[in-house]
Image 1 (cartoon, rainbow, N blue to C red):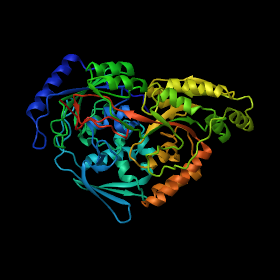
Image 2: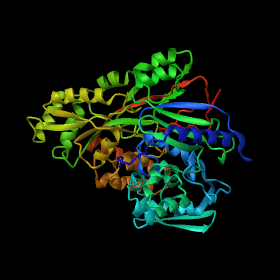
Image 3: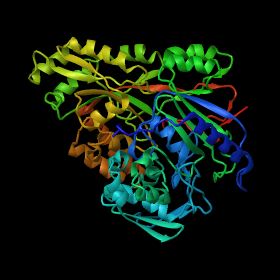
Image 4: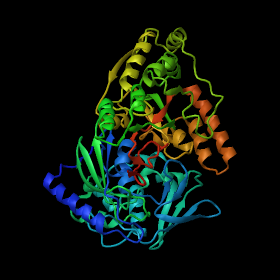
Length: 546
């Protein structure tokens, strides 16, 4: 999924001209809704390169920060700093009494971005909505056939099976008909994969034989216009002077300085080489808090780090083996060493801040002797040998995957399990994990939409086995409860289904929950109105500079 043809470096002279033109345009154009954008530059020290700029293909915060919340909008959107859904490119929506039909009334006067590679001739309308969703829904859609990629969120959420048809009622009204009631449908429609693309731009790419360029040269209706990307170095955006949200764009230039080393990100922030940084290490928090020019706000993370067991692999298909591996992990030691006080033990497949969380769920006690006995009962008295994959990147849910892997490796050695640590570049890591090449995998999740289905369905449901269900675990009694939970809007009934599902998870343990972490967002004191996003990305609409 992540192995994409990425952008070629743009020549410096051409970039300078484009930036100068954009700055002039930003300063002089404007429209009734948006006054001239302040002539300010914000540099964001990001932790990694995006795999591409087509949001429907990806599942990570690194990608979404670089594409979804800069270039694009959705029909409905999450409020900044929260999980409440608010109108986006749809001004309002209606739901039929039977819960099967959603009618979206689209916003008038929204302009697609003008770039060096595309100049729109019309404004946003229903055709763009139809193109965006039919591309994911219909394997025979012409653009899909020309650029055939996977849409993991769309399928993980079961949207391909849920949506019966999408109709254009008129140029500014679109109707979605569902096959069954789906309680989280609106929340799911606010997610990144549902970012609205330009059908006119797609037609041009198709005609030119360059459909794949949609992943390299993005065009949307969002707050920032893509200008250039130099792989593993910088991404440059200009503020969109025609953005439809009044006063939402407060910086004329947004630059991503791709800086994988967390220590270097800290130094750049302290020296004002960047004004916002991603994913500080727990050990750097004290130094950041002591810096006179830096603020370090924090909040409880809506996340979970875990070890996924590939149940299609011999040995790991046995519940007793998985329980033994879980029991042998000294989770308290990991939280002390890896999270350094900025984490709490995880027991369920979702964080305590998620409604329907089963607070009565008990995790297994750390017990090496009992773990060895369970392995022997499962037919492995002399242990077994497996691979343990360690993420190459830092995430809020796992600030140091290599250290965690080494600690788990040592724990498992005590029960006769030899774990060989494996790692790949992040895009390759995810691609191979989706293909099921791993045995045990360090991974994690930050909630996308505030709904329990986003944890239980997306991480453990049968529809997600080829997507974010890295355990490849399809267990009908569990899946039936997840389907039941999403098929009603009654909160009490949904909670009961999800609580029962969590009990089954605890018995079967397709993955070992490790921790929920505290999230920090270090920013320069020159930055105004930056918010911590509970759903795991960074947003720069509404953000300004003194």
